Length: 171
Image (cartoon, rainbow, N blue to C red; front, side, top):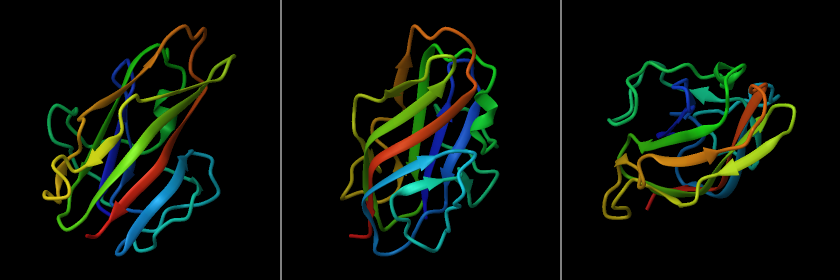
């Protein structure tokens, strides 16, 4: 329950879509999480989630991620992006803020709904933390990873974030 994932839109809006929630020992392996403001399910900090669609969750509000991430505190809802122009670089900051475990996310995808929905993702897998398995807390690598969105006409009406697959285990 120590993974922090901050999404920063191309115009600077921030959302801590996942923080200090979603499981405990022994961890998760191959879980696909979709984070959507309108999801019926919430993440429990003490239960390892199954693949599914959940509301964004911040178990310990008020945290800030290490630089170069923008300073916190951060809102949780993805609705902060509604009405913004989605074209540009979306930065994804991932950190593991407790020792004793390691993990990875193969893809972070941002689904953007305007008049024409798009689904873009990062190009590089994320290792949590950098230096794992010998290092068990700290910033992920790469930090940040980015998602480029181009050619979208209109303003953003809805955003969702998908992590596929997420692995986070206690070695």
